[in-house]
Length: 161
Image 1 (cartoon, one colour):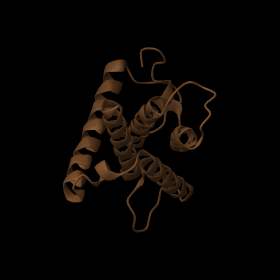
Image 2 (cartoon, rainbow, N blue to C red; image 1 turned 120 degrees about the vertical axis):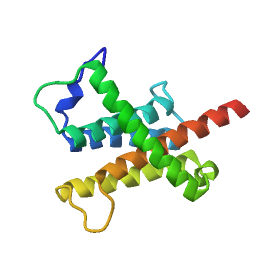
Image 3 (spheres, rainbow, N blue to C red; image 1 turned 60 degrees about the vertical axis):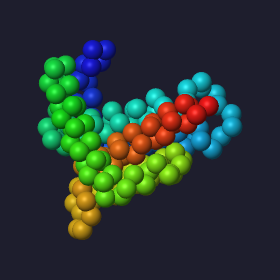
């Protein structure tokens, strides 16, 4: 926000979804390819997924605007609010699933993020309507949580080495 302000507020949801898709695709390519032409690992991409997903949740709440309209403190408050809501969801699901994610591979979490993105794209193509499944917001929240799980697993793996 200090560097760019709230320029992201002009982005429509499909644009944010596509940004997340680019990040997830890059992660998948990094996981599959032995040769990297840009010396960055998966960590900044997972962080990008978290940030773009929170931006999307804010856009769902506030709507898209034609000009940036959020001060740093308001944007930070909204970011924290959606992060806390998502964390609470994660804690509830984590309780019900028994921390199953700890036995998963980071590559599987990447695939789940990509699957959620394809679901979101379909919902967007259906003008945001779903018949029986959860809405776009729940999918963004799941992507945030999968990215957080991946970061935790990567951190734990690096500590073992």
